[in-house]
Amino acid sequence: MLGWTLLLIWAFQRPVERSAVAALTVLVVWGLVLAEIAAAVAGLVPWWRLVPTWLLQAVLLGLFAAGFHYDRLGRLLCWKRP
Image (cartoon, rainbow, N blue to C red; front, side):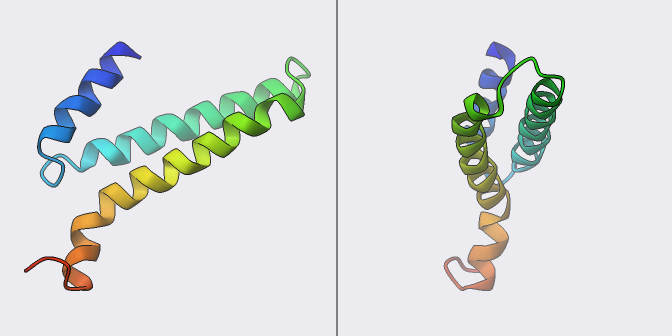
């Protein structure tokens, strides 16, 4: 997690040029979601205990997806010059 945090800090320095890090992070979050679903299906963790985590992960997925598409969306909606 420390390595991933450092990678995100590095990408934050130049978000447009390093937007691929946001896409990679989405894959990591989805992997965590799938692991949690597998744990719940196996009966290792009750479903209700995962709901707060899934809500947080849904917010994170939305933010990283928005960050990845921000530059293209900004040009499309004229927030930024092409």
